[in-house]
Image (tube, rainbow over all chains, first blue to last red; front, top):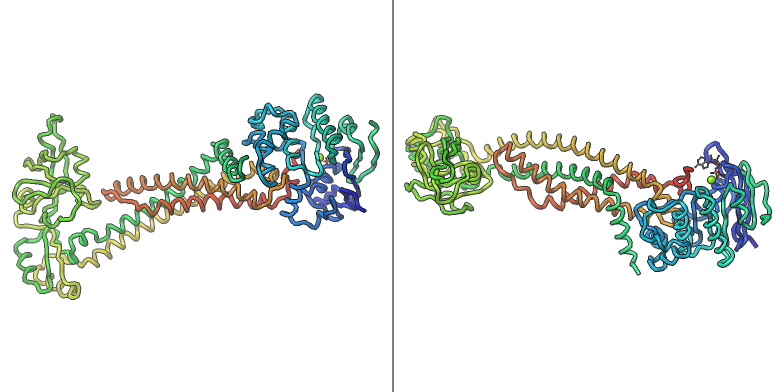
Length: 223
Length: 371
Ligand SMILES: Nc1ncnc2c1ncn2[C@@H]1O[C@H](COP(=O)(O)OP(=O)(O)O)[C@@H](O)[C@H]1O
Ligand SMILES: [Mg+2]
């Protein structure tokens, strides 16, 4: 039986540069996995390929038994909105929409918009006092919490986070990690989180280390 | 629960109202492009409508003129005995100094040179006018709307022409040369212009079948006269019009090109600015179609706004140009409104589609990179 998320012999080339040189890796359902490594080691590339935001030059990727490489662009988009919640390092929010509208945008692409549900999702991340604010009126940590609410709104099977605390101070970092921890322990979310910060990686149950396009270490967290 | 459609409108409204600067620039570009096309089309349509209009208005198909003037009696004898001529009427053209006498307000009455048309005013039946037609030999005048406006005249007032007082009994607006003239009965005009027994033109209605013979007959009978058929007049006007249209066409193309370039560069800049937005929408599960619909709708909204504004601006421009160049106002047909809006939408959507399609082809990971 294959694992929940599995990538096998994945190679990714950008022109002459090779970002991933044959990576194999599996994540079980309910696992919280951190991916660490130096800048340029291929962490984001691997996460993007797992989430279907990018496709490998060769190798296979599967999630929940679905071969992602076999999907065309639009079926891929549909698969993504059903199964994957994404949190980026830079809080990518639509600048002219309010917090609640940004969450509703994800609902819109998924199926139906439900403003109450969007509010609840924001309340879950402690943002119920900033529903009508636009991104420019929010702090970095607040924007990132809106992104998490948006990533969770369609009940995905997996949460992918690319340096979710990269631009945040320690206090906000702890707050965001606390949120992820609650999702992991209470709702058994599968989480894959890229970071270059050992403190952040320490919150996960498993730490995968990358170097120069390869996984060089894979061990349980010492926490 | 907000329906999908309602939410879509909310999204659209937000993107239009929260990005006022960008939207204004794009709308303005569309406005200019549409205004140019509407005014060019309106002008050429308007001028074309005027083609041969004067002769047609009198039901005439031959015009007889002479630079020095025609002897009225001689012309009358020749035309009334000419086989094939059904009807004819004479006109005398001149220019006189006019002042609005008796206007209690202005101590110094305004004086201006205006066109005078002496005619059988019976022939003007069916004109749209305020007041009534002047009676023959009663010292009454009919005034064109432009003259009325310029001299600030009122019905029932008096108009002084070369020191003679005429009572104003009617105003007329036809979109033709009459608008800028004063119309008197022919004998009154002949006295005023000191050209007794003389006319400038005879407008002749002949049987269409024997037009050439009638023209030949008139040429033999009135050797000093220039005789042209309506078709010849129309052809001369057509050639003139062709030159004007060519010029307008060239100017339109140049301006349209400039406007399109500015619009598509605005749109490219906007889409570039919004590339992250597109990548983000893809990342959270938007299909190419779902995302495209947003941006195309936005382009459509901008196109409609620019199209309506461009139509209005184009109408004003056509009116100003025709007033300046031809001395009369051209009515821009209302069909140009839907046409202008459609043009605006096409320009705007195409201009936004070109960069959008490029952005939609990119992988979201490539767009969202940029740490
Ligand atoms: N779109 C791209 N075009 C060209 N090179 C890229 C692209 N994305 C990533 N790379 C290259 O691939 C390598 C791995 O990048 P990335 O996965 O972003 O690293 P990390 O997230 O670990 O910092 C880097 O050398 C980077 O320059
Ligand atoms: Mg990275």
